[in-house]
Image (tube, rainbow over the protein chains, first blue to last red):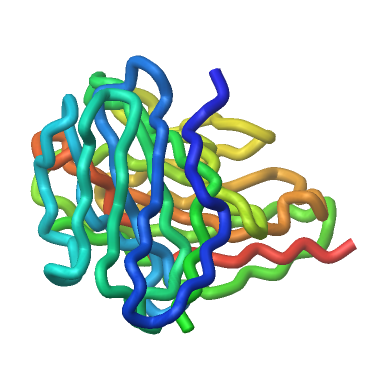
Length: 114
Length: 114
């Protein structure tokens, strides 16, 4: 398996623009997680899905952020409009259904909002 | 609420010497505990986990961790450090009965000097 795939790897945009980050989880994994990593706040969970259904979105910063999982093999995280404080590395991770299993992380998308 | 503390921002050790990276946790029930490593510009890679059973857990690349319930600790150890072990290490916890998302510590940068 290719592992968790994220695109793009790097994104530079201007304040006010819409940004869409994409994730393909490992085939057969039932859970998908979106995390954000910054120097100031470390690794934060934004949202996670189980069988394509959002379970906990309490970490989503505000209404500018939205996430979807239209099918088992694809998820998006959208920021509209983007702001400089959204600059961070965004990670997607997936996990099988067994409660003891670890999460497998993608390489991340480095977002810079100017 | 669950939390993880990594009290050291950085640990410095000479190559060949043993290393310890500290982690303490807080959960309401029984914990699942994990260690991940992050190399520059990469996603997190799973090292090892404690689910149940033996308090000493062995993982990838010669790392091991000791679960201590009375001290609520899960320190990462390696008998002989390599320069290539230099990276950012994250401890994470999840309550067995709680939500599936992990709570991460702030990370500890390990620097192994030749």
